Amino acid sequence: MPQTLKDKNPILSGPLISHLTSGDRALWAVGWMHFFWSTGTIMVAGLLPTFLTEVLHASHTKVGILEGVAIALMFASKIVSGVLSDVFRTRKPMIAIGTSFTILVKFIFAAATSFNFVFFAKCLDRLSKGIRSSPTDALIADLSTSQTHGKSYGIRQTLYPLGVAFGSLLATGLMMATNNNYRTVFLLATVPGLIALLILLVFIRQPKIQHEIPKRTLRWNVKDIKFFSYRFWLLLGVTTILMLARFSEAFLNLQAKSVGWNIAMLPLLFVAYELMHAIVAYPMGRLADKANRKKLLLIGMGVLVLANFILIGATTWRGALVGVMTVGLHMGMTQGLLSAMVAAEAPADLRGTAFALYYFCVGGSAMIGNVIAGHLSDTYGIQGCFYGGAVFTTLAAIALFFVIQHSPSGQK
Image 1 (cartoon, rainbow, N blue to C red):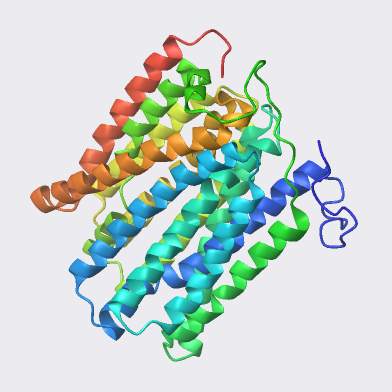
Image 2 (tube, rainbow, N blue to C red; image 1 turned 180 degrees about the horizontal axis):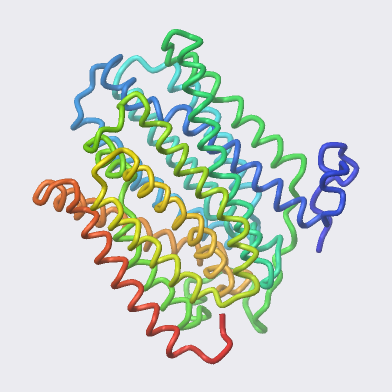
């Protein structure tokens, strides 16, 4: 494993992690980068809807349009950045550009005086996330081996939701301390981004991307898509179906509210969700390096079906909490696992492209899934979206079951 960190740094070579290899330290550095990214992002995203409606007096329709356009831009930039990281055979510059824009937009949010100003900032913010996402996913695979992909993505999936939980609590505390001064909180949200950029520049070095396939041209070519195995395409197909059931957390919010969850306490609901996600992710990642990943994914799908039925049957805030935490359990079991499976099925020098294709499928499917969830909720009540979620998850599980049945014995 190449030297990726400054081993003599007192923070990263202390007694608590001195036993880690330089590669492991680099992966933990990437994980902490995700922690600070998510902390800064949620400090703005968690407050932005009320800032738009109460301070700038924007309509809910405008808020919906803003979110829809921003999501589309994020997934589009994930696709482009993933391919470019393969074209230029490097990940770190794209991650640095995305992180720099992440810091810049916080200043724009703090200075915003109109909806159009916020619209521009939100779009730039989602573009920045997309620019850094696919190259970072590919970098994690570059820094690890095929035998440790599960653990490596488990580190990321542990620290990212912890950052969301920490950022949510931090934003709440800052709002109370500043008498609901949104602009001050938005300005302070630049600090986590600056820390993430420092971690990237000081503690992470880009390892050389190895070419695992002989006779591969050194120049990226769209024809290289033929080097993806049929197992990769089957995985994308299963993922596309599953993501139809991964609709927005807003529907979890609405269900909790409908059964009596106090509006002021709703942020704590998602702190519980993210903490469950974080607790499960790393142990699940380590298990994924030893067990059959497809079968683990199948179990994770079963957990999501269970979560949907818990939410359908919930009649109290306690039931809603159990349902939401079960969804968090599913996310912790499967999110890093899916990334590890994508990385394992992709040639080393096409990992950025692999994640670009993955996010293309995820983004398109998630947008369709949210539209369907909204329609089912309007037609059958809030429980309707969870019936839909259970159906789509079951279909994905059936598809994965057939993939497992036709996979060579012992194949992960």
